[in-house]
Structures are given as structure tokens and as C-alpha cells.
Image (cartoon, rainbow, N blue to C red):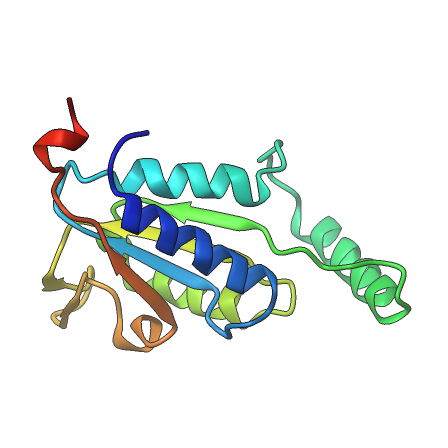
Length: 158
């Protein structure tokens, strides 16, 4: 991985703050021009943070039973809840329903860490006539830590 030293440090520090519970925000938006390493940074941090392997589907009734049992064990001090990581590239392509889902997920006790990337500025929120920074609804933007990437310098890509 080359370049983007400031962005990489910011992402790493942000992840540490989230893990230590020192920030209420659990969502990060990496914004920048195309080709500035947003996806690579986000994928590396996602992998390092909490990648756990299998991404198969779980039926809703099984998920509810598991959630209930985990909540019970957590209350009894038998389990610790460790958030998962969701990385969404080209976040401006999501529709309003998916943004609603992400808002609900961020309010959950078993919340994930959400890392998003986009190269858009002010643009329409899909399936609406509303414009917003990065095509993300304002209520979700309020929950994000936003960092930017910069174009590579010549000495970074030698």
C-alpha cells in the first residue's frame, strides 16, 4: 500500500476510538477523487479490524434466537459483544431504503462498524429528488466521521 499516510493514520485512530468506546460515532465515510485509494484503505482496515470469515445467510428465526441468547449471556457477563464491520464502496449508489436500514443498524446494541467510500460531492439521494453531500441522507451524515483522501504525489507512486 502506497501513499495516503494521513488518511491511513486517521482511519486507524478512528477505529481505535470506536473499539475503545471513546466516540459515539461508529460510522466512517472516506471521500475523495477516483483513484485516491479509498477502497484499498477501507478494505485493509475492515480486514484488520474484525474480519471473521463466513459471510453466509442466516434465517431470521435463527438470527432472533441467537440474538436473544447472546443478549442473555451479555447481561450475565458470560459474553462480550464485539461489533462487526460492514464496508460499502460507492455508497452514493444506495437507495433511500438501504440508508434507513443502515440507520437502524447503527442504533442497535449489536451494532457494526460501518465504513463507506464515495467519490461524489453534492448529488441526488437515489429514489428521491433530494440532493445531499455524497448522496447520503442528512440524518445519516450526522452520524458519520468523514475523512478525505488526496490525489497521490509523484514521489508516492515511484
